[in-house]
Length: 291
Image 1 (cartoon, rainbow, N blue to C red):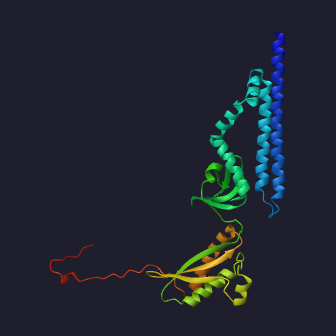
Image 2 (cartoon, one colour):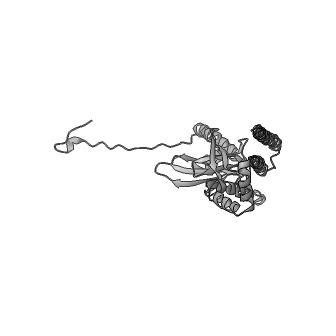
């Protein structure tokens, strides 16, 4: 009896040591990886997606190996584990596991890392409502930090089947549309020139013209009439910025400066007009005035 208790205690001690060592090793790998990625993030030309995903895989392997060792340490499970590994039972486990959502997420994460529809640091939009910066791609999910600094966690199997709008794919330059309207009595050419001047003097503006367009004298900011509306001339300016964040800030600032310039130089921003026709009720027999 005492020998059995000693054997049991010895096994529990070994299991505890393996569990603690596995946990500490996984945490250490995680912290070292975070420090390394923090250093690498200072280099804009490096893609951190592969490094981050490899860190997740290494951490998962450490946990799997540690869990396997613990299983082999338990006498009741040791024989079962050997049978599954050496026999056809392991195939049944793989097939059953493959049918689960967990493996779908892992496969989806691997495909994301290989084909790179987006990377860590990219600004993406999903379903026209979920937008933000990709913060992490793990074995199970993708973490997106939206513009309110909230984290959106989407399983890899789900995001792999969605249409993703990537603002940084291949080229981070972005064209910002600046829409505005002027009245029919305002000077279109003058309004166009004001918009160009205000856009080009903004510090976040970028000249995206090709060498051929520069030689031909094409304007760096194109401003065109979109439509003749019910009470306004609707126009649009195409202004380039280095990235989506700069484009948003630039668009807000340029709209404000356009409004001030329009006010100062007599360009009217229209609002709806309504013509009221008042008929004399005395001309209609039996009619009365009402509020």
